[in-house]
Length: 392
Image (cartoon, rainbow, N blue to C red; front, top):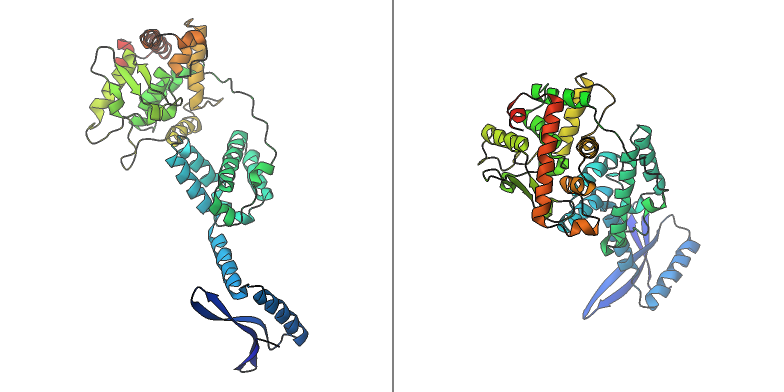
């Protein structure tokens, strides 16, 4: 039997090997392919020898193929959910995706604890479906839907990446899961009593940090998105000019365009008060957090939950986003502003041809009138007797 060698190792141990030479360029290497041991039946040894010799005769390299397979297996073991999440977030950050922090927060919280060390090629749709069902069962259908969307996007990105396909990923397990029906649109709006109680709780602090309370108040006054407010640096504000402005750059606006936000007297007064409270040279952000960063949306959600849990605010509970809806509704129903002005004030993209043809100056004048009118209306509702109320 050509090339077959029995290596006697002592102690009752032996190894059947097929010896052959493998040439790469001018380099010749002796290969030793193990096909059995002392306990392997001879017919099995013969069958394996026949297969190995046939592969070698066709120019194959069984030992090299086995080594490659072991390397692939080892690499697949390292290509885990945690690694995929890190690669996906890094790619999306480089692409300038603004929702990257939210995606990281959702997937690290909901999926990483159970899937973090799992090889991606072994993750099954049933595992993902169980996670989504668990989220929905705790009364968070919106979170479950968001998790599903993020998982589907991440696996789809991986399928478009050669490295992850080579790692064994050959389908998108999240795509096979039936999409949950979107929840009905929220209609929650704050009443006069709720606005009054909320504002009073912010003025009294009730265990809320001064910066967090001020961020809530600025959100109430300007109806901006919480991410825009919390990430506000002093460099975007022009507080010392007569017509005080906030210039939101394209990198931070949802529509990737510069948004000029007129500041009502009350909003400007609040920001000037913040400027006196903190060291603007040491703190680049109006609402600084830890480590030189700014506050995050989680801080607002936690503070709002505490106010409800401690009985300072009465149920039904509301969210930060419900504040924007409240402002839009009241400016339409109570202050009689047209929808295009409200949309501009909220930072929505213009939909109509007429609105597209308004000049920037015209838009600014209209939104400034609305900002002042809403601030005065809000102060009259909450009964503010501080400097904000008296200057509105």
